[in-house]
Length: 239
Picture 1 (tube, rainbow, N blue to C red):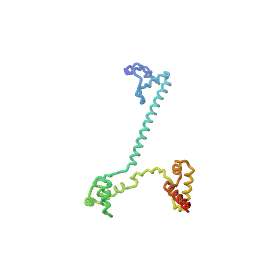
Picture 2 (picture 1 turned 60 degrees about the horizontal axis):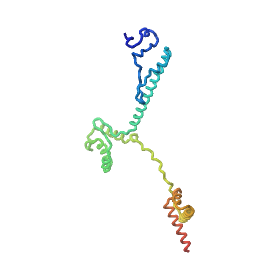
Picture 3 (picture 1 turned 90 degrees about the vertical axis):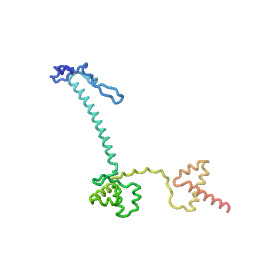
Picture 4 (picture 1 turned 180 degrees about the vertical axis):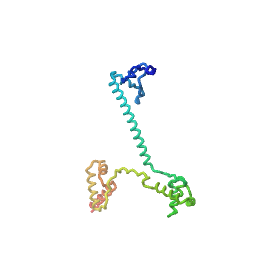
């Protein structure tokens, strides 16, 4: 009875051969394609093989291997995603710690920190612990010694360097080399004469871009040197 419902001859169930499926009773299995949303049957892959038991076993093993490889790839992707999320959570700093019998301890905010700067010594440290628990200093002093010690441990844990995300290295700035040292008057005049000569030889409008390419020489320094050179030339002419 069971063999008739499945479409498989009863005599083939007793042998070691793989029974031939009845195409009219059992429809070919289909796999949903992820790319275009169409159903693609895997049965034609089996039908291309010959009807021998060895060939059919090879087709079945090939299909099972493809399915296992897909499952292993999906499992690897899921595990990699979980590892990445776990790494992101591990780098997230703690902002509060729950203490049994006391409550949640948080570090003081900016406004509270400005008010705490007025205190000095042990009073300031006690106020930091009390404000973090949402208590006054008088209420915090009434806590048992072990609870106060746990609050102090929570404060040290939140202030630890391991709980702070390090800042990223700043990008290198495109800066120009600034000349160091003091230039004498004679050196400035010599630089000014050289700049005036370059300005006279270059076409009109090309001296400014050429000056910007000179490392270690700003436009203000160039103007100062050229003014000194022109002044010295005028003095020589009048003399």
